Amino acid sequence: MLRSAPKFYEVAKRIIEITDGAVVVAHNAKFDNRILTTEFDRLGYEFNKNTLCTVELSKELIPDMPSYSLGKLVRSLGIPITDRHRAQGDAKATVELFKMLLQKDLNKEIIQASVRKDPKRQLDTKLLDLIAEAPSETGVYYMHNEAGEIIYIGKSKNIKKRLTQHFTSDNRKSKRIQLEVSAISHELTGNELIALLKECEEIKRKKPKYNRALRRTLFQYQLGSFEDENGYINLKIEKADAKKKAITTFSNHQQAKSSLFSITEKYNLCQKLTGLYKTQSHCFNYTVKDCEGACIKEESAKDYNIRVQLFLDEYSYANQHMLVIDRGRDVDERSVILIENGVYKGFGFYNLNYQITNPDILKSIITPMSNNRDVQHIIQTYLKKRRVLKVIPLAPEPSN
Image (cartoon, rainbow, N blue to C red; front, top):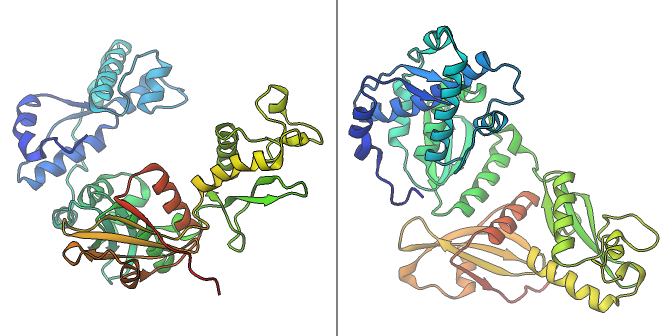
């Protein structure tokens, strides 16, 4: 959506014109105002406006609401909203919410008290310099303290934009980072998949103090398969175990169960054989004619297993050997990821001028990386949802 959008400096003059003598009204106005002032600071212009926050006003004038997020609040109040999370839709909803708040504040005391300058609007010069030096490209970034130690690692499709979000955020972790950060280093990756893999590897290896959540394995459950005594392939949700071959992984049991219901429906599988319906006889779906009867051996194992295999082929690369080719760090470069015997081996880059098409040569430029449940989940999910330039199948490697 932003590919053809104008740059900030191209619209800055118009923003100044339309906000002249006006109060900036926004849902969480402090954040929006900081974004505006940060961008204007980079242009050398002091953008100094009074602000009014509809979150704070709503808490004062409409207390005890279950949530004060814009979407949930306007729904609770019966305010229609279209194009949620788009600038125009959210702005229109905020206008309608503000009108309602104006009506409720009969004495205008709260609104008068709420219009104020944000005392924390100025970003530290140090943070502005760090943002200015960052690239607007895809990669992994490292935040260092004065001693040079890495305190946070992140990835983004636009590093400059992500740092702006870090340095304008009001949450507790961001404030601590803003105080401690002294320098930013980065590594461009050219595409988001390698950025995700690099971020995961680096966090587990370097264990930065502000990346606690990603230090441990994110995916606690996995989907496995086994063949029962009657020859039917069964699916089973189980605790993630590196010693067991996983079809795919999940962050929690509820996510695993929900996904398995969808898989069962999509491939017309039996709820008994996917572990979703505990019974000694037929499953519930057989009762409503949504199961072919594998649960009571009415459908042959051969016919049933064909559909299970379709699912396995789509969802798992456990028995696949492939190179994943995608964009590199510039137009003359490509990236390559190696999957061998179902194991993620690492990634590398090569120049298009060399016209490297031999898989053996491509494999020689791979930087070895760790294989774990998290990176397998990242690759599987990415390949299912997003497009890469090319996937090159490889001949299976002989097992040791």
